[in-house]
Length: 560
Image (cartoon, rainbow, N blue to C red; front, side, top):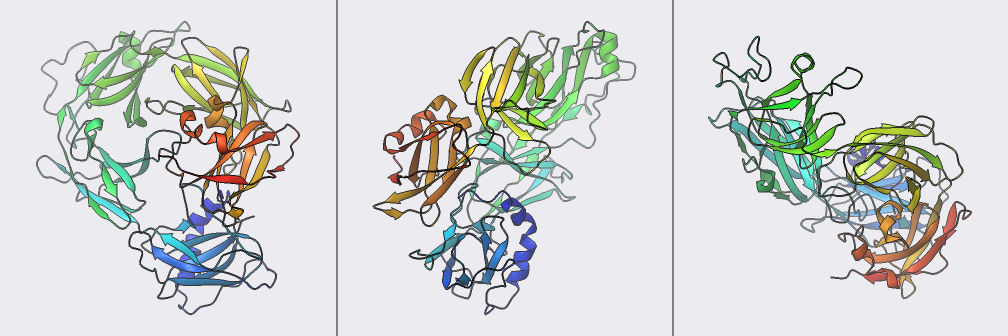
């Protein structure tokens, strides 16, 4: 099942509770329930083991949480053999979580944001569970100059390669820290995976200011001190300045990886950009944004007064690397691989366009406090998420580069609320299902329809009449072109049950795939292989809050 919306709060704030419980004697019995439960003889029992070694984990705190609101029903500590037993459990469905110092706190059989809940009751097998806890990994290192001196206060960024089953960029920033006065940094309690480390810093002695009295295009002249006009390029492990040459670091459960890096100062670049005046007399200020693996890590706008006087903006102290440049009026956005000082051609890049529109519900009302996001749909392109707030349902994006974008809508007034489900999008009068739009070289007007009173679809994943736990359940729309926006996923619970929330009215096929968590399910050609054995589901406008699938969904094995 998908963890309760409040489960992330439990992970952060409930950790102190788990540590406190972990200090109880090993013989301690279950903790009194936070909310009274009916007396019952049902038991949840099993063994907590080290996922890396298979050895039992003693002293781990295991807690059962009510699915409805994530309150703690019962806790217990594992013995020397890793065994735990939660007794007196009422017939219900529980989230099971475990924690211990040195291990990553986890839900039972966790995959991404999904996990398997434990169902107690007649004929339910809940007493031979194996709960695998993964020891946290550590990645540490030193950042030094080529002379061997420590670089303190350097910004160290950690990037993680994502699962192909997760839509979005292939590499995401996972963490960041700064080096201490010895040049050391450390990332701890890391999940297993493939990581890349990048460092951003400036030489302490660098002086990239324009000589006094100089203006762009005037030349550096003898007053400029070239020895101080230097910068550190973004540096990746193993001390390369090329993203493509960055050496990945594979972190396994409990492993400790060392990643030292050396920074080399190089002559900084000067990037000159024309800054034309707009019809109202203002200037089109240029902006240079630095990107690492497609994520914006820094941004700077050109000097205003110099631009007003000369019509040119000069970016000084630029380190060689990857940038996104916005310039001109109307604005043009270009990916800039800066390797030398240059006067930028004002025609490079794609012309950004204005997108205006409205968002309304299927009932014709405007969602209050809606935040509209344009998320890059092409994971290979270097584009950032673009936000805009709506006012009485109306929104406006000023500078959107051409490409494929997915519209996501959330509420600014409810931080923990789920995104609103986009049912359809109208672009210049043509309506299509889903939320993906194609931006071309001209302004667009769009209307976004969000589903109000969406349906929860429930069912069971079974084989030979028996529920199968831990399988990936996907509800795929009939129109696979809207797969990323309309599909819903869940993980089956111990009795094979699943629940797919916020389903937009339409025609669907539901499939259950065993060991399917590494599948790139968001690709139509991948999920299409499983659809012939799935079950058809129709969600109507008046389906209500709950739709139960009458037949069991057959479990399919993952195809090679």
